[in-house]
Structure formats: C-alpha cells, structure tokens
Amino acid sequence: MTDTPQIDPRLARTAPTWEVELLISGVAIFAMLQLPGWLDDAMFMLEPRLGQDWRLIAVLAYFYSKSAAIVLACTFALHLLLRAQWIALMGVHSVFPRGIHFDNIRMGPIQREIETGHLDGIDDAIERADNRASVVFAIGVSVALMIAAICIAFCGTLLVATLLSNLLGLQIDTLMVVGGVFVMLMLPYFLAVTVDYYFGERIRPGTFAHRLVATVIRVYTRFGMGRRSNHILATLLSNQGERRTMLMVVGIMLLAITSVSAVYATMQAGRAVGSYGSFPAARAIRIDASHYDDQRDAARDPAVPYIDSMVVEGPYLRLTVPYEPRRDGPALHDCKQPPAASELQHAQALLSCLQDVRRVLLDGKPIAGLHYETASDPRTDRPALLAMIDVRKLAPGRHELLVGRPLIEDSRRDSKDPAYRHYRIVFWR
Image (cartoon, rainbow, N blue to C red):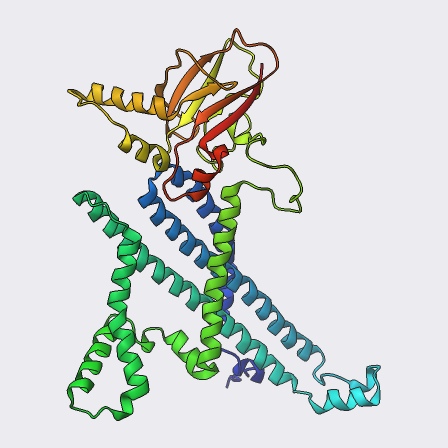
C-alpha cells in the first residue's frame, strides 16, 4: 500500500495558473523587451518611403503596436517581481513557521499594540500576494489585447479607405472619413445601452421601443461589443468595482500611448535628453551629423540631404538628396509639366521639376550648371538625387550649402520659420 502524497495546504489556496503565468512571463519578457526597439527601427526605415496618407497608417500602427508591447513587457516584469515576492513569503514561512516574533522587535508599547492588533496571518499574506500577481497578469494581458484589437480595427479600416481613395482618385481626408464612419457605426450601440441603463425599467416588453433596443444590443453583441466578449475584463469589473477597474484600464492605455508618442516626438526632433535648455541649438546655427555620410545613422536618421564628410578634400563635392514622398510628392503634383510623348520625356520633366524644388545655394549664391542625376542611397536603398559640385575654385575655409526643403501642407512650423525652408550643410575645404 502506497502513501498518498500530501499537498501543502498553502499551495492548495493558490491560483491554479501560477506555473503557466511564470512560464509565460519568464519566456516572453525577453521578446517584449526587444520588440519596442525593433518597432523603432522598422518605423524609421519605413517612414521616409511613405507619403502623408500611408505614413499616417504606419504611425498609428506603430503607436498601437509599441504601446501593446510596452504594456506586456511591464506586465511580465511586474508579474515576475510579484511572483518572486509570493515565493519569498512561502520560503520564509517554511523556514520560520511561527511567523513574526514581536517580542524580539524593538518598538514601543503603543506601536506594538497597533502592529499586533492589525496583524494578518502569514497564510493570508501569501494568498494576497498570489492573487495580486494573477490580477496584474490578467489586467496587463487584457489591456494589451484591447490595444491590439483597436489597432487592427482602426488601422485596417484606414488602410482600406486609403486604398479605395487612391484607386478612385478621390481627394479626401481618410482619417476624418474613417473617424466619422466609426462614430456613425458605434452611435446606435451607445444610444441603445444608454436608454436601456436609464430607462430600461420603464420600457414595457413587447413594445416597439423594447424590440428596437433589444435588437440593436443583440446585433452588436454578436460582433463582440458585449461585456461577455472580454471575460477577463468583465470578471474584473464585476468583482473589483467597475469605476475603479475602468479607470485603471483606461489609465494604463493612455499612459502607454502617451509615452510612446512622447518618445517618438523626441526621437524625431533629434534633441538630446537632459538639461540643455540654455544651449544655443537654433536650427539656423546647428550642425547636424545626419548631413554627413561618415557620421549619420542610416537606420535612424531622417532622410535629409548629405555629403560625404565635413571636410572636402577632392575636386568635387558629392551631394545626395534623398527623395521625400511627403515633401517632394506634393511639390511635383503642383509643378506645371508639359505634355510628355514618352516615358523618358516624362521622367526628364519630373527631374526638371525636382531641379527647381531642390535648388542648391553655395555660400548664398546659386551654383551655375548644377545638374541632378537620379540615383539611390546605397545604405538604405531609397531613391535619391545626386549632384557633383565642382569645388576646385573654392577658397580654403568654411563654406555652406543650402538645399531646398519643400513644405509640408499640415506643418505650421515649416511655413512660419524660414530656417525650415532649406537644409543647411556646413563643410570645410
């Protein structure tokens, strides 16, 4: 006759999923910590290739995806810490089963009376730690899934709307159209649940109003809008308080998306993080490393004109001007082009337009005989214009190139600040 193994009563009170939670957190946390950096690299690689409409879709998908990744990474890290605390409580209790000896702790009689009067047992502390870890795991995963669902629904709809507008040749604001469509689609559901919540008791069954409200709620519930569609969130709402849980969930979502947006804006601005507010960093006097091929980060720096080096030693200065769809596309659209009889003539007409848009000044004067060639950025494989500038007659010392910078229609900063009308590249001969 074999002895039946005895189960530790403390383990019998724990969440049955603790082993799976630890496994998922331990394995997935490394991927989640690396995913935000990978998304940054992908966004910086993709953004210079896109026009305004496609860039909007990419940026929104990037914000939502990175927010979900950060939520999961923070969730798994916090969950591991809470599970470690739970394991530590279990271990300490197994070593010292009698618990806290207040007689061996230096404290006054008043403090001892207060401490011993509110003392919970070690079993209760272990159970609270276990429950806390499981709830954090559930909330984090639920929030990440909600962000992912919003990303798929909104960005997918925006993608379809952009495709249709381009195929049909419509000049519309796809974001406003998609936002309006979402409002129109969601309005009946919110009206129905609001009427049901405030006036449901007064509506008699079988009446037209009752059938209408029930039909609307039933239809939207089938498409996943009901409370039961997210069992995790519904369970938390019903057991921990609806207002408290919703504030926590919405707060986590807003904090993640706001943080991602702020970091993205900081990376785009190219400003150093720190107490540098008094440093003279105006664009009109700043030398930007992204304008020099031997200094720029091809994976992260924006697609701006660049030369080989800050010091030019040969007879020619090579100027590479990457094509920027957000800037050059609208500029070419507004350019008056004569009718072209062949594809070559059409390409030459476009190149002539870019020649005017990307006009180059050397020390404040136009360069005689400057001619662009179509080429590509060898390190990013993006289309670019190439100009070889003769610098044999330049005097030794400091010189400055100004390369035309087409304006973006929705950028107020570009239209107000003259420094944003040109790219400024300083070099020495």
